[in-house]
Image (cartoon, rainbow, N blue to C red; front, side, top):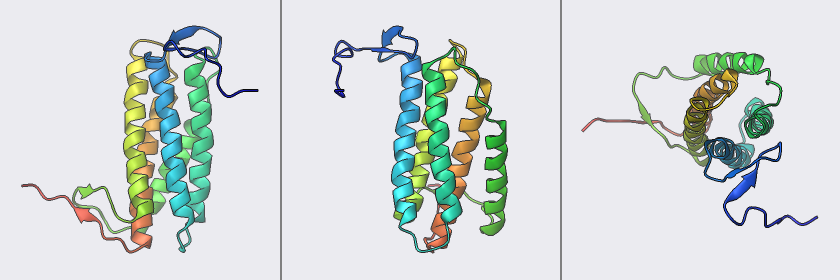
Length: 181
């Protein structure tokens, strides 16, 4: 089977049910942003995997998140599919965030995204998650979107922020405090 079909050569694509839509549609933009986020997390995962310190739980969680994102992208591409059960995942994110918070120095200032390669890529993934969330919210204002997807995306960006901080902490990469002019 060939990877190319030529069916999208005129700027249209098919949703899961076969309906043809513009590649610039809100729905395609929303699930495309999820795909982009999944790729960014893949790069972060490759960088986290090269770290010497004990971060296997973060690696496992990032892989689980990538699987979640495939399902979320599928639901966005097929609006009539059954709802995902995401409340348990959101609760898991909150538990991890709380655990990481206890292990890190208290944050009392804004910090600039950065640090080591893995931490920086997790910060970048957080910003891609925020953009994906904005695209999904924009879609939800025009079409039906499962509300728990928006909650999941909101909490995911928080989790990626804390993972970035934790990885930088483990690698002894200093957080750069933002200083107002």
